[in-house]
Amino acid sequence: MSGAEGAITAIKAFFTKHEMLVANRGVSGTAFEQKQILENTLALDAAKRLGTRIIDLHSLITKSNPS
Image (cartoon, rainbow, N blue to C red; front, side, top):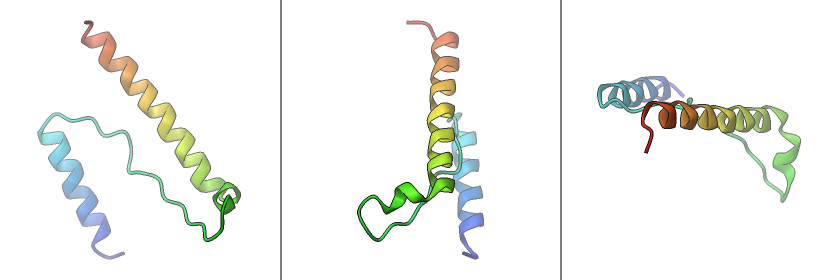
């Protein structure tokens, strides 16, 4: 995973330069059988946090740019 951190940093810098919001660094989980991912509490918690962050960002955007 040596190049991953640099790539993520570059992508985040691009987003920032173009005034794009970054919700988080993403969610990753591995499963080899159906529903096995449900046992990965770290991935599920990360997905829940991402969902909450997306809702928060949506609220911020709609408050600052009312239609």
